Length: 315
Length: 315
Image (cartoon, rainbow over all chains, first blue to last red; front, side, top):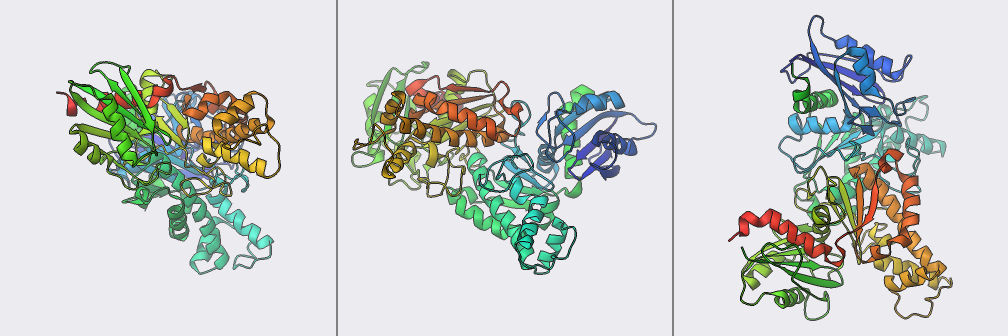
C-alpha cells in the first residue's frame, strides 16, 4: 500500500497532508488560499503537488470539501463559500489529473469521524460535531455510525432555521444558523451595530474580522462581547433542536471561530437550557473543543479513507 | 414462545393488540380513551386485560408511548399530551402488574420501525417518519438503523423551532413545529381567525376539531383550507431542515391529521421547495402516507419487540 494524501478545503484555506502507509500523523503539510489565483481546482492541484512524495507511490487522495456533496459520485454542488463551483465533478477532475483513486467527502463529516476515532470524541457513539468557521458544517455519529444520508448529503447543520425573519444566509435562505454564528456573520453583526451608531474599540478598523472581534472581546470591548453572545444565543437554540433530534452525549466544536468558544459559551449554555424540551437531554452532556486542532479535517479524511477504501485501493 | 401484547398510547386513545407467537397481524385489538377515568396507567392496564388471551402464555408486553422516553429504564418523562405523568416508571409499573417482561419505546420511533419493516417504507434505509396527531412525533431510519440516541430520546421532530415568535407549543417553548401543525394547533389557528372576525362555515360550531375543519375544507370552506395550508407551510420549513440533516429518500406521514394530507400537501411542497438548500435533496424523494393505517403503532411496537427482545423473552 502506498502513501495517502488528504486535502481539507475550507472557504478560506486549502490544506493538504501526506501520510505514510501506516502513519496516523502527517509527515508533511502545506496550505494555500482557496479563492486566490486562476481557480479553486488549480489551487487544490498545486497544494497536492506540494506534498506529493518524490519517488514514492500514492495509493489514494481524499478530499474533504464543503457540503452538500454527492459522495458516491464525488460531485460538489454549489457550496456557498466556494465561488464559481456548481455541480463540480471534483473526483473525476482529480483522478484524471493525478491517475490515482480519489474520494470526496463532506469536510465536517470527516472532521467528526476524525474526532470520533482519534480526537475529543473517542469512545462516544452518539456524537455531534459542529465546525464554526467561514461557514457552519456538521457531522453526526449515531449508534457508532457516521450519518451520511441517502445521497451522502446529510448533517448540513448550519442550514437549519433559527428565525425566518433573521439575516440572510450565504445559501440564500433567511435566518439559518450559519447567518448568525459563522465568522463572517459575527463580523456582520458588529458592523451593523457600528453603522447604527454604537461604540466599540473597533470602530476605526477598515477590515473587521472575527479574529479582531475576539481579541477586542477578550480585552473587554462590550460590543465585541455582545457579537459573540449573539452567536452563542443562536447556537444554543439550534443545539436544543439537535438534542431533540439526535440525543447525543457529546458535542464537539471545531473550526476557527471555536478557538474563541469561551466567548460564546455562556450565552450558548443559557440559551440551550431555555430551549431544551427536558433537562434530561443535558444530563451528562459534554460540550468540548475539537482535539485534533488545525489538522482535524485532514486527519479525519485520512482515517475515513483508510477505514473505508482499503479494499478498493490496497496494493 | 408465548403471545405478544402491543400497546400504542396516543394523546387521545390507547390501543392494545394481541399477536400470536409468529403472527404479524393482530388477532384482537381494543381501545380506550387516554385521559378519561381514574388514571392513564389504569386505562393502560384495562386495555391490556381486554386483549389478554385466556389460558395462553404472554411472553412480553411492548408499550409505544409519547416521547421523550428513557428506553433503557422504561421511564416516560413529562409528555405534553399525557396529563399528570412526570418521570413515570411505566416499565416497572406494568412488570409488577402483569409479571411479564415489558419494553417501553417511543411511539413514533416504533411506527417508523413498523413502516420500514412492513409498511410504506419497505426497502428504504434512509427514512423519515412524521406522525401528525394530538402532537407531532418522529422516527428516523438512517443507514438501515433506527436512530435512538444516547438515552433513547432522539427523533423528537415536533420540537424544532419554526419561528421563535410563533405560537406556544404544549411543551412550553414558542414556535415549535407542533405548535403549527398538530391537530389542536390547526384548530387553534381557525379559532383565532374566527375571533378576529373572519368568516367560515364552522363559525357556529361549539367544538371545532381537526376532523370538522378537514370536512369543511374538502367542501371548499376557505378559512378551513387556509388552516391546513398554514400547517403545510410550517411542515415544509421543518422538513427542509430535516432533509439537510438526514438526507432521506422517503418521508412517511402517519397520525390522524395525515388522513387529510392532501389538504396540507400543496403548501408543504411549495414551502419545502423554497426552503431547501439544493434541489438535489428533492431528487427522487418520496412523500407518502403510512401504509399500516390505524395499526401502525401497535404493529411497529410488536415488530420491534420481536426483533430486539427475542433473546430476552424467548421461552
